[in-house]
Image 1 (tube, helix red, strand yellow):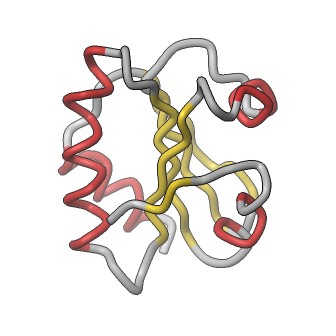
Image 2: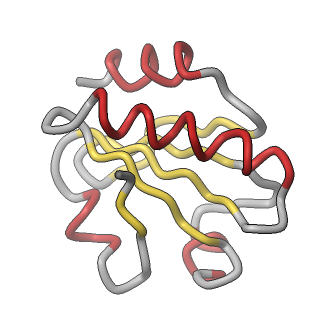
Length: 103
């Protein structure tokens, strides 16, 4: 299961290793397609990468901090620093390849 990220647990979840954050909202159509893909990745990559989601309605500060203008936006972090940003619906294969390229 993908970790739900808030401003309070953000740092502890992305500080080490590779993390993928899915910025989404419940009313967003493409987000509803992206979310099951993110959940599948969280199961497949358990123990090797952190897969997480950020509800932009509940965490507007995080969305603003990382310049999220449209959703879904997926940001890849390596040791706490953003290394890649993908806007729009992404396939599981392309996300997995991006994550693995930073491991």
